[in-house]
Length: 145
Image (cartoon, helix red, strand yellow):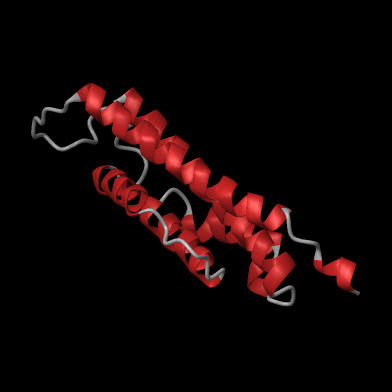
């Protein structure tokens, strides 16, 4: 369980970081006047509305991702793994505290699970890096004023 808790936490933190980043890209390059994209509003939404809920975080990230109208779709494997983690631990506490998992006994291929989680987390990070590389090459809007 500690292994799953750490991966779940890694996905949660990466989603939150990515949401902040995408909101800042949208604010800087696309819609500087949108109050919903301000860093304070985004931070407050992450804390109070989205919290530790991976499904809500994924939906928020996808909303920002789709608003950028990027050439590549968001990786379906990343979405699937995040959804699986959410279904297994919706509140973010089942992997952390004993006694919160269902009574059923399931078997897992631990090496394959570790490889899957690592690969999809790497893809999530790579997508953010890809977007960053595209926008870091663009001039800032202030340069056009």
